[in-house]
Length: 313
Image (cartoon, rainbow, N blue to C red; front, side, top):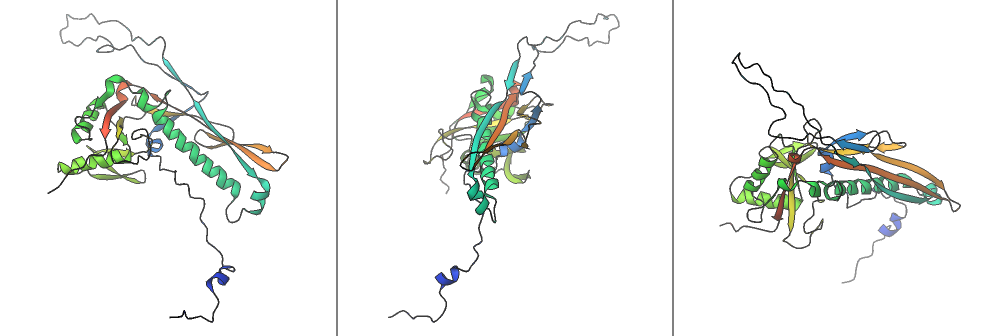
């Protein structure tokens, strides 16, 4: 049967006069970066943070505790400090953005091309910052946790018992767990299998499952078999429990405060000039580090299997 011809304006012709509604550039690699939101940060004056610790015994000092008036000799002493405390120096994460001024002059409506380029570069730097907070050899939380604060799963999959063991390691006011989304899904399966599904809570604009009232914060920077997005069903990863805050002797993020051309916390955007070809250049630098103020501020659950499932009758 022959197609009926319409005696009307075609879609293709009408399209030439239509205004197309456009989005800003969509960057699929952008994540919520919950770790950076939940972690407390401290601004530095000169890029160096020294963690002073005392040489600890069972108690800081001997003390007299007696109702016997004959015992009047009060113990004497002092609290010893470490002679060589650790100093954390800020690391820099930098990139340069080049934009042809002829392009930005002509093609900046409805969105400013320079602003969009810089905005995407900032997101990239902040994604790298969160990855470094977890994985840096120098200051990353995963590699700098004390050996005494590392435990292994009982059977591979993360169970309520395993997370309880983490809480026993960070029992002084723990703040949050962090884990890969697939590790959190594996934990939810284990809870469901045992008939103890975790409750949810709304915090900082997001909804999280909790265990013993402590939120499980997702991040793809705690890799599964070294990958953000593993292709296979199985894989090994880690789960961490963190206490944050300087006043609680926890884990804190570090940044340089008062930077020239500061755009956000620890981030500077500098205009480098325009070359002879009309290309404008911008330098973006982000300064960051992290410090674990006490060994018991963080614990790591290792060998977490994310691919175990259960059969339900």
